[in-house]
Image (cartoon, rainbow, N blue to C red):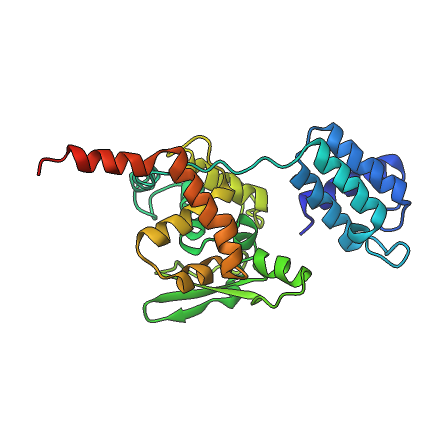
Length: 283
């Protein structure tokens, strides 16, 4: 399946009359500048850079993504428009759970609602990115007496780790409960006619639809912080939490997710509220 990034690159090359797999570096720089001119975020532009790097021939013995000129251009774009920092708040998950329950039984709700529900619950219970859910292949399913085990191929963390010389597992095992009849395609399909494999953006949008019931500022990426927060709140041990998120080390988890949880607690003054509540309780 051609990704949205690839499709846009293909169309741009066709319009500008460029060879999409063998062109000048200046052409790629112009395309990246074109994306910046469309007010795209740095992370989105970086996704296009990575997509081009996968299909383009090496230049000066280097891939497009690692070529010094492209690296310098990306640094410039980063400085012009750095990624926004995550601002996840302490989330009350009850509204979104109530919303899901209000949809009714799985056999009666619409395909769209069932898809949104499945995407959200899988993201929360597995600490997965939308891109991880996109890669679920039902041919990897292992049925058990109590449910099924799904292996997520090449989870995002394994790719990041291997690019830095790490040795993360290339499969993420996920156990879930009862499962409907066999489907011969990807787990997530589009809900409109033809029902093709859903894109990462579609899965992220479905998750966000449910998350915004609890907080309008949440995005699909925030499910990993929420997942870690819920796991800690249920007294899961650190080993379990790290395995759930497929984090490369305790240091990475502490740096990004523990810190994120700590900051969101501080912002909402949770500790002070607990103390005030305790002091106001009659002895």
